[in-house]
Amino acid sequence: MGVILNRLNDERFPNTIEEVISQKGQFEVYRTGVYKEADVNTNSHLALADLESGINPTQGAVWFESNTNSDHSWHKKKEFIAEVEGNRFYNK
Image (cartoon, rainbow, N blue to C red; front, top):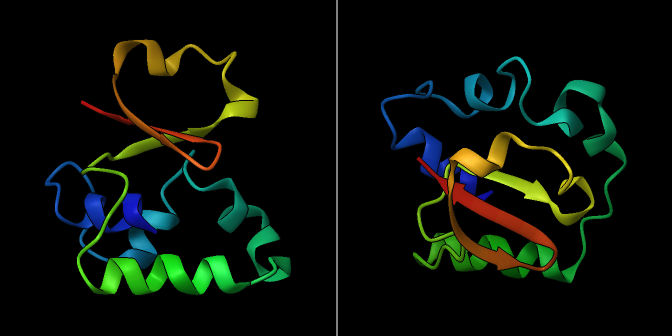
C-alpha cells in the first residue's frame, strides 16, 4: 500500500491507484487476481491505519520485492531503503 501511495506522488508513475497497480510488469497479485483471495487480517487493517495517519514504513520507496525474489537483479541498480515484514524497499 505504501509503495502505491509513493508512486502516486512520483511523476514517473501514473496518477491514479488503478493505473499504478495495473502497469505492465508491476503488482503481479493484481494482474493475476490473487489479491481477491488474500486474507485481510488485523495486520492489513493496522497497516492501512498507519498510512491514513501518515506513517509509511516504506520511507518513500517506489520499488519493492519479496525476499523470496531476491535472486532477481533489477534491484541492484536501485537504492535499498528498508526491509519490512519480508519485503525489501528501494528507490531511484
